[in-house]
Length: 337
Image (tube, rainbow, N blue to C red; front, side, top):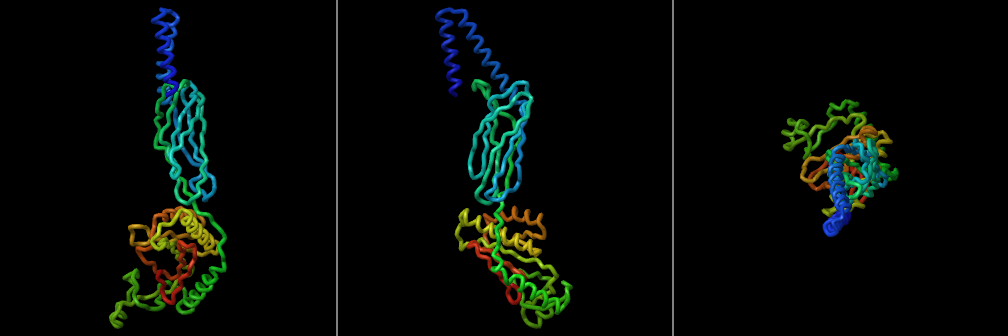
């Protein structure tokens, strides 16, 4: 705006000198200034059409506290260099960022910003607008760009788990597996025992003849297959309170650390949690490192979850609460969390 005011003032002074003094040089200077401004306006709009832009991130997922980079690749296909390209970005959790860059003629250059998120979740970077300006800053033109938006997943930190807090996990699991194996072998379709029906049990497992005899619904329990899946229940109920960002970070760190511990112990497991508005539980199974990475990205959505809308019934379950405590639930029959 300042450049436009100064240039307009220059034109008015030149016009006044030309009219009042009838100076031929002033007329020549005035015409030249008008033609120069016209050419600049045409040139900046033509150049804006010849600029191509692409966006990418160095990594799609980073660990909380690590540094990530967002790149803009700017290709100027025109024969004129560009002195000023204004880039307006919108970064979730930060707001709008305005930066300036340039581009030589017939060249391709890269522009980048560094991101270092402090909280788990998703960071979305979107290019809102790009404008090219002439050398005097008199005119600008909007660069036509596609929807340039990228999302970076900020994963929780993996820390060392206190193995003493999980001493009962291995012994309890091995004890029950040995008991099952001794009783009925390893066939998962053999009936091991019967028990009273619990909410959430499948109807096909109901023992109808025994239910009629006992006058209550009874369920058949089958022998447990080897390498059974461990349930890691992510309990975000928090007594109805909205957790803070730091508390949620600590909670997710604990979930990631426990998952890494189980994976090192070659124990298959699944993350289980409830989401607002859903009565059924969400589950992500983990059996290898690749699946573990995908699971960590999946549980980031738990920030909007609640565990007050349902119940979990599992053979083996570990509960992680918002207080950061890990609790094991191994009931005599089938556990309800």
